[in-house]
Length: 157
Image (cartoon, rainbow, N blue to C red):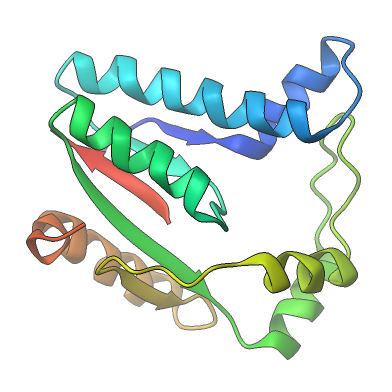
């Protein structure tokens, strides 16, 4: 699809690499950088993919506002996974991002407690399923304009 992906974790890692200590502010900065970069893409008439947990309404409102500002459709894809398999994947994962500790299962459980369920129409994909099938499902959903309703979020002009 050749759509740029703006992922908040590597952005935050770069912010930390600049000398700032990891904090709420570096996380916020990462979301704001992703928003700004996506906005620039949308302004040019291109699409953008945001890779972010966006667990609460404040972060989701950022994407809703950007979508309206740039007259772009917000397409939400939520990735889910059976908790036992999720824990196994977390324990095996090594991201090696500068200044960001590896995520532990305790981190995931803490984040899950603050996660507010989405109200928008969205595609929910189970990432334990066949990767090719999941990708095909996601691409079909995006091509349909998210069933013409509002995950990571993909914004298309």
